[in-house]
Image 1 (cartoon, rainbow, N blue to C red):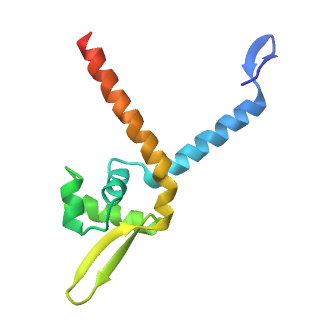
Image 2 (cartoon, rainbow, N blue to C red):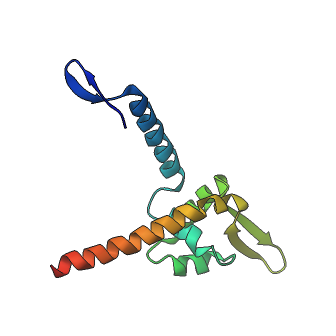
Length: 127
């Protein structure tokens, strides 16, 4: 970050301001696609294998059937998951599409941060 003087006051350079705006836009775009309470939890639930609707609902505690259905449709539309339908017997399963691999580092980082944050909260509560 570069601090420059403008009108006798220190201010952030316009180059940094432009970079900041670009970062904000990128984060907003990412959160638009994977934000919300459930999407990343669903992706994590599917990480080890394809699952049926009820299996996902059991793993993602607290999600209603209506919300899960809506979130699965959104994730399918954005290319993070696929829906596999077999006919005999009728079986519908959901799995991770190759594009979801682009989230591996994001999920790993969020998981690590969440663990650290939980530990911090416990430590703060003991003080």
